[in-house]
Image (cartoon, rainbow, N blue to C red; front, side, top):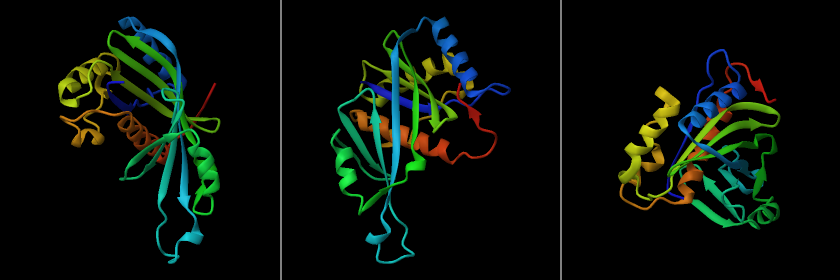
Length: 212
């Protein structure tokens, strides 16, 4: 894994989520990108159990437990504005045992699933973001595999994303602000997914498109 950018692609006006995903896929294939299987990223929300808070007015902390098909033996635990902990898959079992401290907000599980594409040194993932049976948005992930330093390749990543996203290509992600000359890590990708999935989860305005 090299430097990776994760962002949201707006749904094309007059189109569904699935139709917009298909438009993006066609643009990538026209560039010469080839399909390389599928991927998923999921995120479950845990909140501090009420019994652990002495003051009832105190705001509980949220923790996000995430999984990625790119690292099937790993599990990521993230706090908002906090550290990203990387553990093995047994962390899910540990969370069950910690239910007296952290409770799973089951209705808030959100995931992105879709197709992986390879184009030269770029790995691209176009995903449909869903909560339950409902499609909520589109995620785009671009990984420039040969490089692990943001400053050395960010302009190249943006130029490539503009080739199939047009004006919707993103600006510099917040997680990059302290990463200019330091080595990029897989945890940085999961932080971006956490921020994106939370943003999409909170976007309740407008109609929700059903998945086909």
